[in-house]
Image (tube, rainbow, N blue to C red; front, side, top):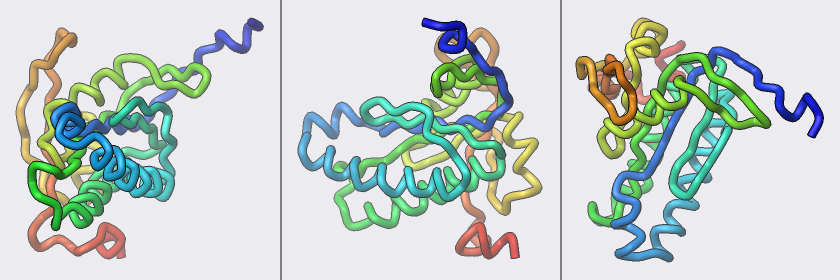
Length: 189
């Protein structure tokens, strides 16, 4: 291995971490159906990530890790993913729905051979774990970037103590405002 293969790049990024809530239960109930539904959901998610200038850095089973050059793009994407997936799942029985939890954090990351590493990634993953199924949870850092730019409702969850991180993470749940435009593009006009 040459020196270039060990090179680690650092940069600031908006990190999007998504994982299916109750995935093991869904697989136990119906492996084939769950995998088929997951494939459809991932196609939609992957398309929206690309549309919002994101890059998928890693996937494993039911999880997705992506980076965005903009916090606004990352949160906009997360909200639109949840909206799109909820609309295609609305006729499916509640217990069979494949619902992602999504966490978004802006922080310093290390990039090695395309993979994202570091505390920024760990925080995004922990935010994902406290998001409601079908929901989006963001860090206070992300909130500072998006609170005035996106017409969404932000519920302060306070500092959240999470697994394997010493310091609590100030967190916000994100939801659409009832009177908000039907798409974030309309809001930008």
